[in-house]
Amino acid sequence: MTASPLPVDPFDLVIFGGTGDLAVRKLLPALYHRYADGQIPETSRIIGIAREGLDDDGYRASTRKALQENGGDKSKIDAFLKLVHYRSLDARKDDGWDDFAALIGGQPDHVRVFYLSTSPELFVDICNRLGTYGLNKGKARVVLEKPIGRDLKSANQINDAVGRVFDESQTYRIDHYLGKETVQNLLALRFGNILFEPLWNAEHIDHVQITVAETLGVGQRAGYYDHAGALRDMVQNHLLQLLCMVAMEPPSSLSPDAVRDEKLKVLRSLKHIDESNASQLTVRGQYRAGAAEGQSVPGYLDELKDHKSNTETFVAVKAEIANWRWAGVPFYLRTGKRLPERVSEIVVVFKPVPHSIFDPSAGVLAQNRLVLRLQPDENIKLWVTIKHPGPGGLRLRHVSLDMSFAEAFGVQQPDAYERLILDVVRGNPTLFMRRDEVEAAWHWADPILAAWADSGESPRPYTSGTWGPSAAVALIERDGRTWNEDSE
Ligand code: NAP
Image 1: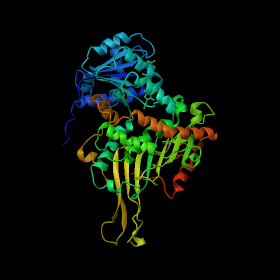
Image 2: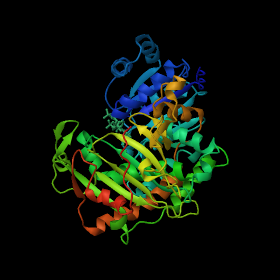
Image 3: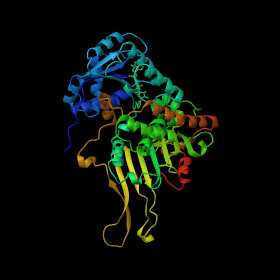
Image 4: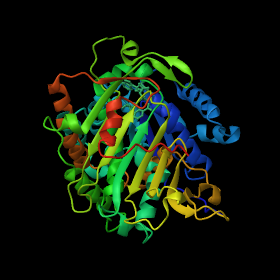
């Protein structure tokens, strides 16, 4: 039996960019699911904002469509839509802001969440206006979507401007990977058991792999993506945050700063990669035409309609953490578009046993592996060696123990945005990035980007539907290791 989740206090949640892809595909469905589960009080309000000239009814109609496509229950959707409102505002113009401020001011006791689901160029304008109209006071919080800048300098500009209106304690920089069930479960596994932590170090762990692979290309987002690339879009935020969760020291508690202090120490301990070693420790690639999910697909440059771009759509990095716990343990990171499978996973590979007592005819003694799958399905598997059951001599088998138990508990795993939005309402920033973390991550990423730019080299081409350039395979095989290939 699972306990019902506890309701949160009544809130007003304003989605700037309320008609955009993220709002429609993720934020509104996440809010609906929490409402349907009884966690959102009826007096709460969800207010979509964009320039499009819609009214409440028009916005409710498009929200209804999105929720129905998502499999929502009709009567619950009807009830949920009573909470939903719309205001047409331009972040860059004053028209309508008086009325909007009066609407928000009408519920002074509510927690106010301003979710900035727009392009980051608008963050400063939106925050300045929220400040001018006094909406940053009381229980006000602001959520910033990625990307926060494209380097340390631009991230600082955004953070400075937001910081002039909202205190750091009111600022929630979201990384939805941290809201995933498996990432929470990693905390429970590491710090709720005595089994793993004694082995969680360079003495017993051979290496760690973190893969975030997408089958999609850049499609409609080519314009945005070409200014970013895989290192900025995925590694600087999502992959580094996952690395932190694996590598951090046990925090003294789950209090927001205790956890974020430990993550920050990891980021600051990352070994520097620059022009002296980038060619050995990084591989970048760009997809060419090929096949994805049985269909032929165009290459990146064709999608971009520009034949000169040096933007990487794939990156592999051998990262190292220079501290006592992790000295000499590589963290191989890779991410890319148009890869053969959509999969996000963390693989912790333990060292081999020091001596085998088994006859070679018993089979190969594989290394233990802990595989934390974040996408497409969330699960955790521990691979161990056992004896093949029954007679026939001692034959060794490598089998996986399922440690996620979602089925056993009969629980449907919530989308990461469901958990994270309610964490903002509750005022719990543990799973959000603090400003110094963002800065430390850029501090590591900037010299890699500079080394690539200075090299004058183009990204290596790879065929869509393959695991990136062959150099990415060589990056790990040079060290006598291979990328995890068990798709089970
Ligand atoms: P999008 O589909 O392009 O939506 C942008 C939204 O902003 C629209 O509602 C647009 O409506 C509104 N907007 C644009 N200019 C405005 C202005 N001057 N004043 C008020 N509203 C304005 O973008 P998205 O994909 O939803 O992404 C939003 C943010 O989330 C971006 O920072 C993106 O990087 C980030 N993100 C997106 C995803 C995703 O899966 N989509 C994932 C992670 C992070 P109007 O044009 O009508 O004003």
